[in-house]
Length: 158
Image: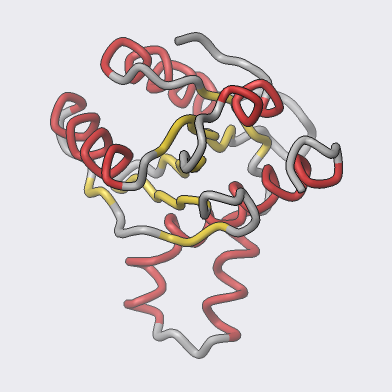
């Protein structure tokens, strides 16, 4: 299914389905999932990146477990708004993922999500080693919560 607006994903969800967000790192894929009411985002375990096929299979299993009906993918736009090589890699991942998973997806500007996630983990007094293992899923949580808040403010969800 092609890229769509976040509002279209929410409108197309069946009862009980959730939204997920991905933060694509070079070594891991951060994952967060919403509740069925589309109110709050919760981090899930990281997916360690390896071969693409194994990555998408692991992702597909987790998305199925969480009854995900759409995916928000963090788009790592540069601070000046331009798109660099990481954006191209993210778009390529989404195109390839689309061939394996029949889920609508939307891109979400993720500027500063990793910084916010890192600060939140520091505020929680999480050790440096544990932060490294959790930051991508926490960043995915910030991405998803931003999308959920937008849906709420647009009146798409109550």
